Image (cartoon, rainbow, N blue to C red; front, side, top):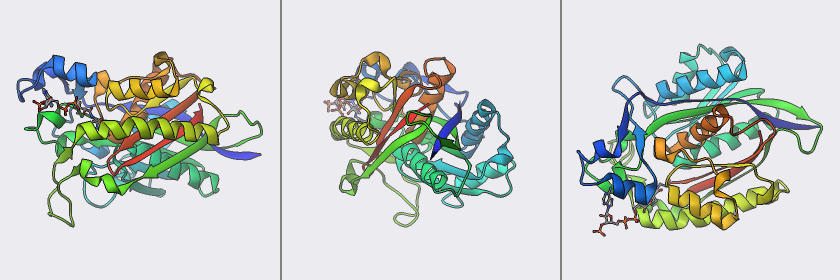
Length: 323
Ligand code: COA
């Protein structure tokens, strides 16, 4: 028997405010054509004044719990991936915990920017397989609109706010091909800090800071790293790209999605794309895309899915999951 973490529910949440490229073009010197051609993005959702990362996360978690058909109080672990926490401390995961009415469980945040959900998933999976926890909420949630420089057209058009969540459950599996997280792989290379970062922080400037990016160089690294980590993770699982039913990638840029799929020889029809509707929601993007494809009926129980992401640091990773 093998102990595995099985995804038993998914959920997501988007702020009500939806902003088109044309609306952005009224604020900065850009056009709908430029944004669509270079990125594939058409809309993004932006958090209202009364919304924070933890409120978005809580709604996504509620939806995931409902789809799993389990009570919040049965959760014994919350791992929340975010680069835009409500406060420097305590962890936003503890705010989600309280909002869900859970009085005692392990709850903490993971910071790996756009790869955050993959990092959080591996952490939760390891804790479950070690036998320490039985049922976990793994959440990616962000309010990147709060750290964007709204004067910088090269970055402010690319990001949006949102949250996605999954419920993981410990399950004994006798079969080799059974459901659950089959393999995960993570990487980081801190030498590239200056290509994608926030120019503030509690121990440097004492301010929150704004996002800065050298987009062209990030693009180049992303395609190479993502294709490599997907191949590596499939190999660890003893599988190949021919076995994959769906890739659920980090939604940064439609051209990165196309180039990565081509490198792996995957048909574009097997790639879940939501970047046109949500833009880049950082740690939220993978669970948000997963929930979208589960709810619209594309991803079904038993499908082999590959999750992948790359973000600031650089950090990157992938997970192979029998859904
Ligand atoms: N509207 C119109 N023009 C814009 C623009 C915008 N929103 N943003 C940048 N430009 C201009 C630039 O000023 C530049 O003009 P110049 O040639 O006169 O100097 C021109 O477009 C080309 O800029 P460049 O940055 O070289 O464009 P690009 O083809 O690399 O596309 C990105 C820019 C950001 C879309 C692309 O590099 C990208 O997607 N990178 C990856 C970013 C990413 O995914 N990051 C997150 C990873 S987690």
